Image 1 (spheres, rainbow, N blue to C red):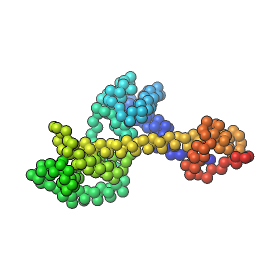
Image 2: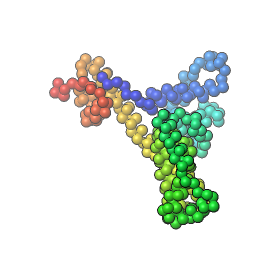
Image 3: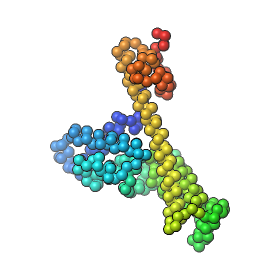
Length: 293
């Protein structure tokens, strides 16, 4: 029998997170006696919150993981949340890489973020590289920007190196949302290079600093969106693996023998080829009955 595959963002864990999160919102500021009187969470309110949270996530999935502030509030309008409690909702959605338009969440300072040891080592090396980068004096910058806008390759290189220190603070705002800080910085640098290359297309009234920051953010967001799509595919596969594991257990107990891929195919309404692919993905030596048995 194949073990239940860990599913960090699967349905069951999402439900548990939703309930835990509801408790944090519901009892924010409550006294210990109030908590004892009302219990950990009222079941009907748990269900309402869990249903609204699941529907909100489904809505975001169908809209490139983006929602408007008004839409989020509409999902929870019957629960009487305060603005502070809504901020917790927005932060929770942000942790799931769902962007709520019209909401600005304060970035977590880089030094307070729980980076892995590998990320910490990278940050130390990268900060040294930034310190060694060649900075341009203020009176040289205007001419350098003009030359880069005209397509001068040397000017572009110097300007990109001068602005290297702009990447990490922006990348840090998107940390822990599916990509390592190394990948975020790399994507940010690609955005910086794109911004430098397109200075000649700068719109009237838009400063070069704002233009470069926009391109850095755009590159990082696109990378996160692409990663989110990959994660979604992985979650679907994991859910199918879990269904397959449960079905093997149920059929084996009911039939008193090992089941065949064909029997699983009929039971799950899934092609035999997909059943076999999932068994290979599981990476386990699963004993299945011979097809000719």
